[in-house]
Length: 91
Image 1 (tube, rainbow, N blue to C red):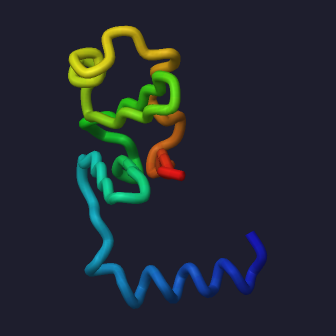
Image 2 (image 1 turned 30 degrees about the horizontal axis):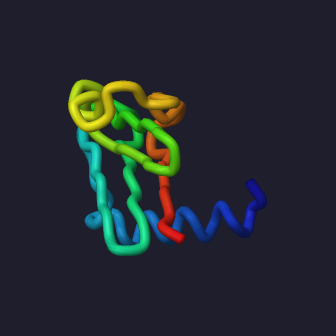
Image 3 (image 1 turned 135 degrees about the vertical axis):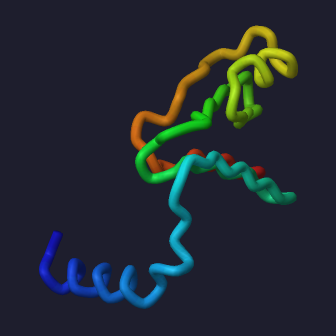
């Protein structure tokens, strides 16, 4: 990471450190134009599970919940890195 960007990130973290979320969590937020999910930065638990079936995207903290809604998804996965968001847009 370039030094200027690193300095900005450090200043941002120092200024807003009380606003940082620590601990295990998985968050799913949806609106009329899309859905997004993210896990904690060190991927403690619960996990975030994502699935696709046709043009539909499912997000949950458990695969079983997705399979209740969609028994045979085309693709199901856990985001590979902690803190990596999964985003679906409605067009």
